[in-house]
Structures are given as structure tokens and as C-alpha cells.
Length: 314
Image (cartoon, rainbow, N blue to C red):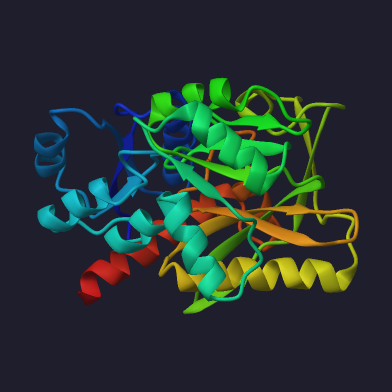
């Protein structure tokens, strides 16, 4: 396969910019190990001219959250005519909006929790009363279009819903769901040889009374990843099937990672799907890909070669 010139996009105005830069460093190192020429490009006002000067064979958007994971950067790259790793404009936009994605999942018969959207300008006291009446006291409040657990407030035993809504609304509209007790599970999906391959099921363990928040995601040693998860075989297969189905119904391509809660009775709840999973040293997606036989440089090579071939075919 040819050596490729790859622009690795990073940073930008996202709340996850530092995570993005960390992912981008790992991606660029992996690409160089695989024999490619990788250049880091900051997502700023000079980004377009930097890309046109570099004229890369492929762009790898190592971006998390909006902009970058919501279809805006993908549309920009389409206009520039540059092949890129990951989902297209439509798939990225649909997956990024948790409320829209939930409707897509429900229409496909996938197991999701109820939810209520709260927007800036809503009467938060009135919303809090309605939420308690319809969803119960235990809820999770999360920004509609953010990742890495930024702005998320779990209230498993109830609490000040209006205050938690205020914090989440700093990031725009938010989604409120019932708090589901259970084990935190994730399943990656990789497109390879025109097939969608699910990763082994991974369970995420954190310290007692903690959850997989921003600190536990990106601090080494703060969480434990169990692969394969200690679940019945039929439950693991069901999780993998749901992850693949979610990837398909959202119209995604190349890679994704689905997050779940599995309850005490092995009841599955699909939470969300990430179109550009983290590639940091503590990230889950590279672990799962390695279990499929793709160590990190090989995974990077596969993703850019696939994007390059897709661009050439276009």
C-alpha cells in the first residue's frame, strides 16, 4: 500500500480540544510508525489554507465534540475535495445530537431510555417538576451535543434538577434521562473489507461511588477496562449486534463506539454512539481494535488507506 501524506486535524474551539490534541499526537505517531507522513493541523482560522498548502492524500479528523464531530468539519472537507477518515456529514450530525439519535435507535427497535429535552430559555423550575413527574427522581442530565461526559450530572438519588439543568445549559440544549443502575459497557465497531466487525465487549470499572466521568476517562489508572466483559455469551453477542445495528442505522462509516448500561438482570440500555472515538493512551477504542488483531499503527494505517481508497473511487 502507498505511503500517504496525512493531515491530522486537532483542537479547535471544542470543550474537548485538549483531549483532541492528545488523540492527534497518538494518531500522528501511529501513522508515522506505519510509514506515513503525518502533519498536525490545528482547527483554527488558518486551517483551510494549511490544508490546501499541504494538499494531503487523506485528512484524519482527531476531533471530539462540536465542531469536528458534528458534521461541520466533514462538510468543509467535502467542499475542499479532501478524503477523510470517519463518517460523512449526515451520519456525523445525526449521531452527535443525542435526541435525534435516540429517535433513530427507537425506530430501529434498539433499547433506549425515555428522555426529555430542555432548551435555553425554558422555565427550569417548571421543567424540573415535569421531569420528576414523568422520569422519576433519579435522572441523568447531559448536554445534547457534547462528549467525554462534559457537562453531565448524574442524580441517582434525586437532587436539585434545576441547578443541574443550569450547568448543562452552558453547553446548549440538554437531554434528561432516567438514571439507569448497572455496569458501564462499550463496544467498538470497525469497517473492514466491506464488513462491520464488532470489538469484544469492554466493561469499565471505576472506584466505588464514581462513574466514567472526564477525570476517570483521561487519567491513567483511574478506571479499569475488562475485556472481554464478564457477561453471559448471549448478552455479549446482543451488545455487539446492537452496536453494529446502531452504526448502520445512523449511516456511519469506518469506525464508531457504542456506550451502554447493562442492568442487574442483564437488561441493556443503549446510551449513545461516538463517531470519532478517543485515541489517547487511556482510550477504549484502540484496546478493542487490538483484540481484532490491529495494533495501533496497523489500525491507523487501515483507516487512512480505507479513506484514501474511498476518495480515489469517488
